[in-house]
Image (cartoon, rainbow, N blue to C red):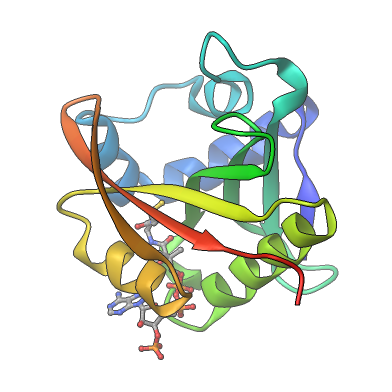
Length: 162
Ligand SMILES: CC(C)(COP(=O)(O)OP(=O)(O)OC[C@H]1O[C@@H](n2cnc3c(N)ncnc32)[C@H](O)[C@@H]1OP(=O)(O)O)[C@@H](O)C(=O)NCCC(=O)NCCS
């Protein structure tokens, strides 16, 4: 189940992020800071508004704990484009199909909201992440962007209403 996360959820989100240090320290090029959850909830490009930012918690079932997070930016690249900055599950929740289910929920929500395209950036050396995005239907755009100390491959998926 997906649920919008707000600043009131920062403690439980921080605990989740600490469990995901394997991926986050690789992405950030250093250890996780004590305010990582608050930063994830707040950070957005300078020219994006607060209402474009959306962080969704991924919960196990209807009553289970927070096991993942998805960071989104609505209509930033273009009005119909949803940018997905991060999809992250705690290590114990990975490789059981939950990522695919969570992504399908995000895509269904995005379609209902009228978005026609989802765009993501995958860290150049994240081969497993890339495999996941290909599996759920994303295609390489050929675009490459700098991100912190990394390069990102930009992938897109058209999600026009069926
Ligand atoms: C990427 C991530 C969200 C995928 O979620 P998941 O629940 O582990 O993935 P699923 O079990 O739904 O797998 C779906 C498909 O993705 C691919 N995949 C995912 N993890 C994989 C792995 N470790 N090795 C190989 N293939 C993998 C496979 O094609 C898999 O399909 P299959 O099981 O039929 O082979 C999760 O592994 C994660 O949080 N990883 C660390 C963070 C990250 O890399 N995020 C993506 C960049 S934003």
